[in-house]
Figure (tube, rainbow, N blue to C red):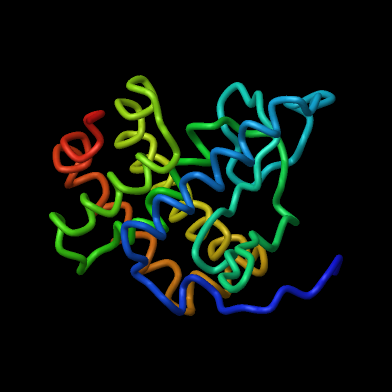
Length: 190
């Protein structure tokens, strides 16, 4: 622990409002932009749980409501999974989780949240076009990690699969993949 930061987890205030989502998007953009100056020695040599293709940026890899403290300061915590990735792969996970793109959420409302998040990030056209498919691929990868971990006994993921995370990520992956058109429409740059 480097320091204690007073506040509450963003997941306890979910879903976040559009202004808060834009703020989160800006924070993640600042992290990604600052990371561009970091030289990654042997990016393909890192053992990443969900590796990105052609990693070129040092990323958090778990930017989600369960890792954001909101208080006087907003701070991302839990950097133990940090490592080589890409802007798109890291952003896909964050957009899906902060936008609450999960089974049971009204698609129109989730799409508005996704748009606010991407606007805060100031995502360009190419990133916006790639994001829907990347979110589906990233959510599926998370489900596959949990499922294979359960089959092999790889902890803590095996226990998480049985404790509801497997069902959550299976239905999230299906929801994100099924609603690609809504996400693409919400991400059209305004």
